[in-house]
Image 1 (cartoon, rainbow, N blue to C red):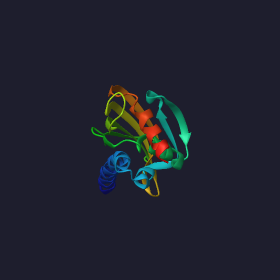
Image 2 (image 1 turned 120 degrees about the horizontal axis):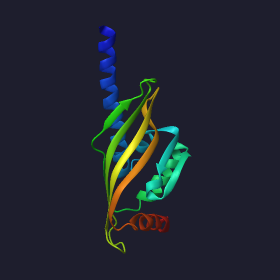
Image 3 (image 1 turned 180 degrees about the vertical axis):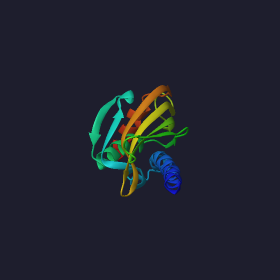
Image 4 (image 1 turned 90 degrees about the horizontal axis):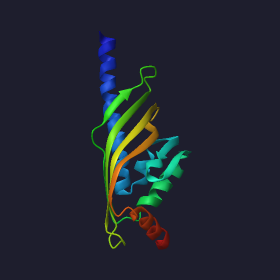
Length: 165
């Protein structure tokens, strides 16, 4: 009985840590806290943003951080919400899990041709690995359901950031 209770408590703790890690991803981006953002991932990490035009690839953690920083730091402000986490543990490996979550990503780019606002809705499939430092995302797939507003805003924000350097 104790072992079963211990494993159930551990799984509850794991669920909390996994959910928080996925939320840290969103918070790190919006705060421009790239150290927090980097801490969400294994090294290397697989990222699939093919729904947004960037094919799936394996990245060194710092390379992924630099890519996301370059795409989003030029925005006036962003807000990424990550609700509705459904966490599934691997039945064969207790150190692996999948977290499915919704994505609601708002982007403000004041004065942009085509409009100031870009909204992206969809979901993420995050595959996580328990490491000595806690749960980390080892693979993520972004699923875009529909964009709204200035769909050219990411390119414009990236260009603004590049010209300000």
